[in-house]
Image (cartoon, rainbow, N blue to C red; front, top):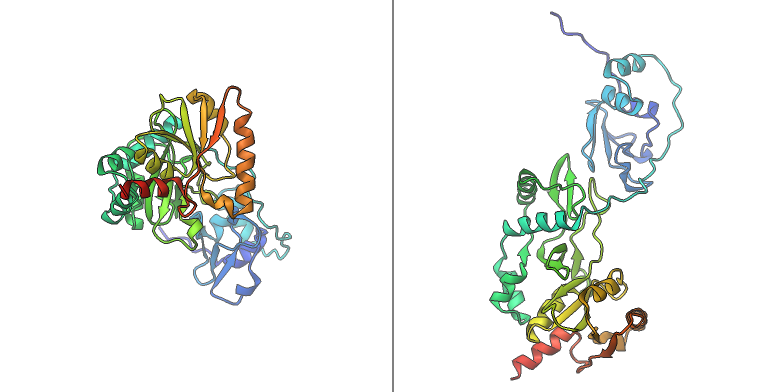
Length: 355
């Protein structure tokens, strides 16, 4: 049986007939760049769709969509490949006005707390804590036992390791679509984020709400931490600034500070005092609910001492203070220390090392 020979159908001309926006700067190249009509490129002016004028193939470097002229036309028009071929061979030079893809407005929401806790716990069980990260935690004042209890782990440093971990979690029945930190790359599930170590962010019951990464390499000192998130990535999910609870939750007094690792260290150095840790001075979502759920009667503010020199930080803390004081029956006070030490964890560590 003879194999049917199809006419050559130029991929760039097909893209024009589909109304795809082309990057005019690349039209003379073998690889013409265009806006992807499938993942939307995350906004106007982005060109992640590659059109190969020699092979008449296309591939999106973000979402992994790929194929040839016929399948591109068929997918966009919602018709079969055979119908697409018949339409494409017609000598039509009337092209629609190119339309920039519109980004999707609705963000994917994270899966339930129970699902996040189960998936993240399984993930951490299959990771290790590198020596360099363990030493960092010991230098902060944590004990080896507390490091194990808190569940810190190092991010996989190779793409192969990240994909294998994602495959493992899927084989265990975890849903990665809706799990912050996971995304697809060329159709395969993987992990997103820089190298560093992971910090579990837990609620009052010890369930892992999300993860933060302490970066190995930070551009600036105030960007050492980042949420384990895959926002604005193919099949990715944003992370929220969840409130972290650490220490003895039976206590009626809680210290209020910024950052989960800071709270973990301070709680350990202060004989397991209860600490409530917000994600940042402007990240107040869930704070008052957490205080109410814990049933504490006294809040002791222990925010960083840079509030003394940074007006923006000071204003944000004042806003937080007003919100907390609105809770009926709450006593509110402020813990101060030598401003030579920025954080409460730094100060408490200095007291331990000088004894």
